[in-house]
Image 1 (cartoon, helix red, strand yellow):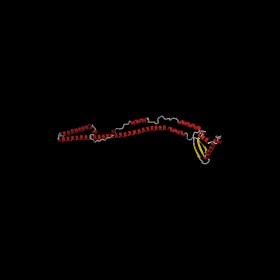
Image 2 (cartoon, helix red, strand yellow):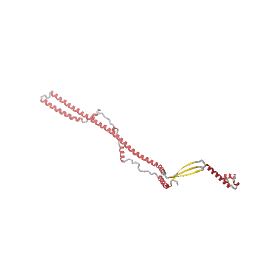
Image 3 (cartoon, rainbow, N blue to C red):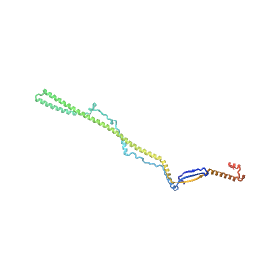
Image 4 (tube, rainbow, N blue to C red):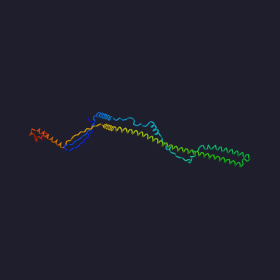
Length: 302
């Protein structure tokens, strides 16, 4: 029994009297390897006929618990409002702004200073009266001038107290205004920075989620392609079993008759037919077949 055959023929045609010589070669499986190869091919065919066994477990790890918590936290981030991210600078010289920032207790802080100046002026007035009384000039014009000067000094001191108090209050209000403006500007900048950081963190988390999802899609596609290509791979596997088998080659030589030999053979055949007819019709016409007999044979009515 031949397990694997390849055939080829080479020949040289001679138009002379000797005819054409043809040599053929045939390859077949070596006899000593027949049982082993037969068993191997049977097992291979059985294995190739098995159905595809799909892996039913997860193809990717997916998101971890910590990643899920991080993604939930990122999705819950609230972006700053437009008001929080906007800084609208104000001018301290605007009408009412300085008064708004000046201490409402300014007058309460000035009143004790006024009272102290007044007491000081009263003490000085009593001393002046005592002085002019001892001199016998109490109530005179010189005393009136001295008291007027004393009163003018009191008013000057109270004016200075008021001016210094308001100057200090103004400077403190300006410092407070500038401090609040700086805080508002810093808060707006921090809100903007927070918004950018939140967007960046969400973008990074989204990219990580997308990579995990893409990994799952890639694994699904690979699994689909593996199942789709399974029959083709089985055919390739079956073909691979036939590669490298031990073969042996046998050569055969035969001759084709030449034209002259064919003619000679044809003439011999005609002569044999004639002899046969002569034997059949030997009793008629001295061994010669009549025309009527030949026509009857040709028509099949003999």
